[in-house]
Structure formats: C-alpha cells, structure tokens
Amino acid sequence: MNNAAATTLLVVNLGTPEAPTAPAVRRYLAEFLGDPRVVSIPAILWKPLLHGLILPLRGPRSAANYAKIWLPEGSPLLVYTRRLAARMQEAIPEWRVLPAMRYGEPALRQLLRDLRRQGVRRLVVLPLYPQYSTTTTASVADVVAAETQDMDVTLVEDYSTDAAWVEAVAASIRAHRAQGGEGRHLLFSFHGLPQRVADAGDPYPQRCTASAEAIAAAAGLQPGQWSIGYQSRFGRERWLEPSTQAELDRLAAAGVREVDVVCPGFAVDCIETLEEVALGLAEHFRSKGGQLRYIPCLNDAPEHAAALARLARHAAGTVE
Image (cartoon, rainbow, N blue to C red; front, side):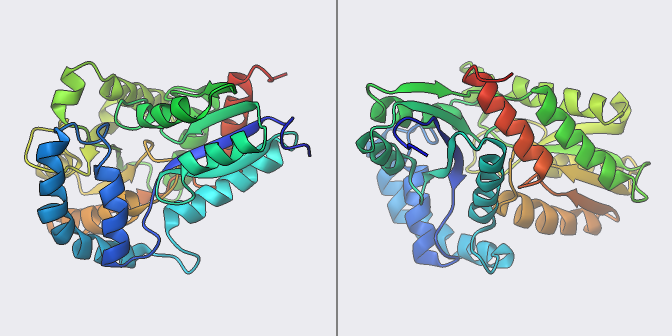
C-alpha cells in the first residue's frame, strides 16, 4: 500500500493511563482535565486547583479503580480500540486504519504530524463518540484543524442514529435479553455533562435521547420498558438529570428488581463501564434489593466494525 496515496482512517478514542498506577493516572488526568473543552474554568484558577488538590487526591483512588479492570494486555479501552481498528482494517483493506487517543498514547496530535510528514493527503477521522458534544468530538476537531493543513480531511461528527450502528447495539441487547431477561427493565446509561454546557447549546442530551429511542425501537422495546440516566459526575455543579444512580434508586423504589444496563455512548468498554457500572452500580443496586446485569459495549464485534467502516466510507463518499 502506498501510504501517501491511500486514504488513512484514524479511529480516535478518549484515552487511558499507560498503567494502573497513581503517577500514570495523574499524567493522564493532567492532560485530560487540562483541556479547556473538558473543563472551561479559566486556567489561572483551574490549574492550581487541578495540580495542587485534584490530581494528588484522585490519582491513587483512580489507579485502584483501574487496577480492578486492567487486562493482561493493558487498559481495556486501549486493547479494545486497537482490536476494533484492526477489524475495521479488514473491512476496508484499501485504506490504512490506525487507532489514536485524544489524551495519552498513541497521541492523536503526534500521529497527525507523522502522517503529514509521510505525505498523506486524504484523511478520515472517526471519533468514537456516537453522540456529538463540544466536550469530546469538538476537542478532537480542534487538534485535527490545527495539524492537517493542506490535507483533505473528513471528520465524522456524530453517528447517534446511524442505522447500522443502532442495529448493532440493538442486536447485542436482544441477544443478552434472550438469555432469560425479556421482562427486565433496560436502562441506557450515558456519560454525564454539566447542565450549564447543555444550557449553552451543546446538543449532547438530545443526541443521547435520539440514540436511546432509536435503539429501543430497534430492540423491540415499548416506552415503559426502558429509561435513561447519566453517569460519571465530577465536581459539585449540577449535571444532566437523572443520574444513573438516581434512576436505579427510582426503579428500586418502584419495585423493579431486575435491570439491564447498556452504555451506548461508549464504543468500547472502559473504566466508566466496567468499574463504575458493572461493579460499582451493580453493588449499589444489590444494596437496594435488586439485580443489575451489564450489557457489554460492542467493542471489536464484527457487526460494530462493519457499521463503523461503512460509516467512514459513506462520510468519505466511497460507499457503493
């Protein structure tokens, strides 16, 4: 393959520490939480708080949580993203498909600089955030815009209701619930967002609702059989409601004892799905007398790779 002539597809995920240790987690969080797209507090106020208080406190605690879900090959997010990119490469052999991370390694910015040096001219960037947000997809777009002068770039901004992706998620739900769980309530858990960001015009909550509605319809669920929550809150300000934990509490109070949770805002499993939901929220719901079953992300499932490969080719105008 002529790398300079071929279209290159970057499959971009959020990022992960290099190891489940406090120093590695602090390095990762410093980059992640130092992005003004993620935390919009003025740097002169935020940086001292971040480095003086938050990182020293969160580093060891987060490292312990990462250690609970770390795979022999490394971080689940990185392992599954690499596997997904490899499957997509099989689906698009005429392109070059590379995994990248917005924070951490392999660093998106460095990969873009390497591609420019190699003379790559045609680039497709697929952020693995199905629902667009200024806090995620727009941050990827910032880096891409800064590093791709004189390149022909296509950025996939949103695939929250893409038919093939919706069907892939719905099929995973149907398969999971076919194993004796047809009567269970289904809870869609999306990553949270400060309410002020949504109030400023970020379309993320509307995209999440659109995803949940489309997936529920494709999975054959009626309105009363599913609901939405938002997880992974940080800080004391108001975030999108209801929180996933509050929704689980509501369901428990209403007498619901069996709940399936799916996280279609995450392309692959990571600390937020494996530690926060499958372990932490499952334990919380047990304390309320209920049973929570976590439905894994699509990860590197063939149907997931095929849907995203088609999405990328369609964005680039090369679908048959």
